[in-house]
Image (tube, rainbow, N blue to C red; front, side, top):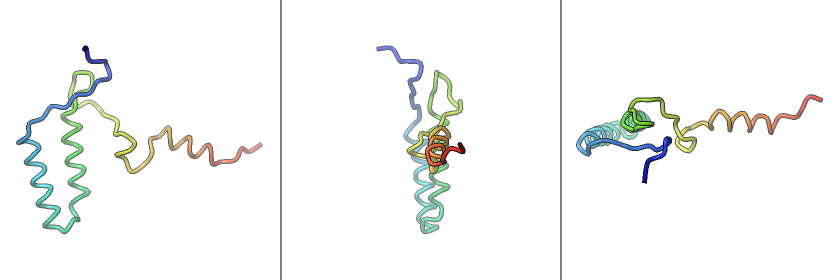
Length: 88
């Protein structure tokens, strides 16, 4: 089975991610949850930085809409266009 051109793979070591996870957990517990948004950003940066897209790491990876706090640009445009009456 050959990988397709849009195949994505992930490369990381468990110890590398464990360090990020344990620091995020400790800081979230110490700050009573205030650190959790920064922890999420740190975790996602790590995963996106180690995700291979078309054979190269560090390329711009579009965040899936279900992980984002806002709908994708195309979906947002469709929502606005469907809710706005025509000016005829």
